[in-house]
Image (cartoon, rainbow, N blue to C red; front, side):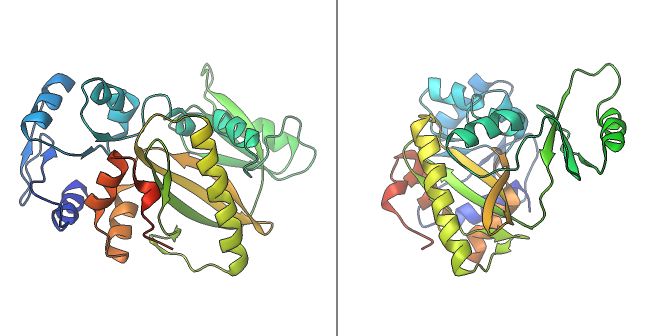
Length: 274
């Protein structure tokens, strides 16, 4: 699944008039255009009379494209430069979640029980290494961080369970949650899991609302079901194009209707997946 496939899904919307891709690549069924700067991109979006744009490129998101579009009053579905930190720094994410009583694997300063998990913070490296003793902890830390590197390592409690993804869309006021997915398919949950998931959704909605998250964008919350409850493993603030495309197809969803509702902060008025 790629950007052209997603654009084809957008074309199926009853709201679709024109769909275009900003890219230097040519596509068989979707018109595209290249650009040299954000200014040129914004001018072309205005000339195209785009009602809504969405960005999937993580480098553009990290570079602050959402803030540039906001400055020129062009609608864009994208997390801004501030909130990409939820993905970039797991420690910052954990501090925020702990403040709002959202379950996540505990940080460990001096482990006395094993195994534990070693992870890098603030790095694109998603690798995690397990340690079953103090000796392994020291040895594996050296493997994880190259000599001379300033990357930071943190130690996390080891937890076992099934992993899921919760994709949501935030519109500066409300969060719309899509069906929980496992391996790109709608997950089948027990009543207990549904009840605990609803509680987690309430906490997440309150966290973004209380923090006055000033962006319109997708969030993927990677979850673990363990100890009869949900635990947040990490956030992915760049839209997962494959997962979102699968949700559109599996639920016969009008994606442009949803995106336009987000632009006008009306996600709280729709309930697609109850």
